[in-house]
Amino acid sequence: MYDFDKLIERSGTNAYKLDLRQRYFGTDDVIPLWVADMDFAAPEAVQQAIQERAKHEIYGYTIRKEEFTGAIVDWCQYKHNWGIKNDWIEYSPGVVPALVFSVLAFSEIGDGVIINTPVYPPFYSVVADNKRKIIANGLVNVDGKYEIDFELLEQQASLSDTKIFILCSPHNPVGRVWTKEELMRVHEICSKNNVLVLADEIHADLTLFGNEHTPFASLNDEAAMNCISFMAPSKTCNIAGFSTSYVVTANPKLLKAYRDMQNRLQLHMGHLFSGVALCSAYNHGRDWLEALKAYLERNILFVEDFLKEKMPEVSFYRPEATYLIWMNFKAWNKSQKEIKDFLVKEAKVGLNDGVSFGKDGEGFMRMNIASPRCVLEQALNQMYEARK
Image (cartoon, rainbow, N blue to C red):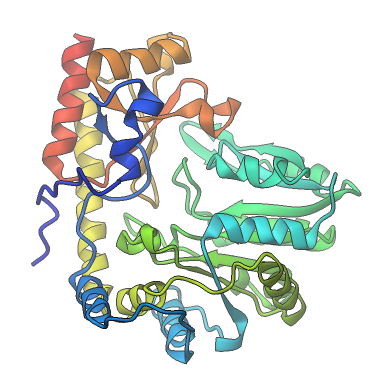
């Protein structure tokens, strides 16, 4: 019913993933398995809704009506068994901008912000570029599975200038879906120390292999009042170009402060097509998403089997969510530059540099497997042939 094996030509569409290869890899001649969007068509319902709206000849200023928040409420209940209310929700132009607004609203220059490293690179700039202090809580690698260092977190949260913990849940790039017990420990530590939790849950819908996402704010009422959740259909349905996301908090004071900052920066209007895309994705994308997740699981298993058979020195912990694989090249005993140069110049494959996720990413690369199987086969075969 859904053809994820279909090759779609993205050249000529100003695709970041393709058109910035020269800048990031020094050549266009690499298979792009880096930027976290998918090489699959968006759900047909989204395509049809956008095309229908585009038929109207006027593309003026737009507002978001209750159907926007209603679609979000229904989705959170359906997908995460999380009961939220319309008036807990505010539009945002993207998860990263929303994190910036929140850091500005809930901390002062010089305050500390905790992040779990290695982590999505913009987390660093969200903190440092706004003159806050990065407090790195390095994840502990236990046989490939990453865990939170709660003893260190306790120490860091207790510092007088620590104001915020930005939680990546599910985690990018290591692919962890934090258990309810892990999240409760985060809540207990942060609540005790008056540290606000900003929960980036953009990958929440892409849980795999039977894992289930627990929204941080769903833990209990106290957690809900000390948290802002950041979500979007962009990763879920491959519609990042519409710049549509939203924040959720049950705490009216937090919501007002967030909204005031977003308005102050004049970034509250939104995109003409963003509401159309979100509503159609959430209201009509359920079957498509389940088919997508099954395809992603098969792709991950394919990569896993290929590496075990032909390149056993390269390993990864099977991701519990996301379409991103955190590949461990340490057994090669090469420098990070040597690993990158081999992949780009010899294998002609473009992956994300592990060090861009923090110094703990030394020896790792991130692979995006959200492409038709034949693309992955070609990339892996090129790696294998270049390595022989």
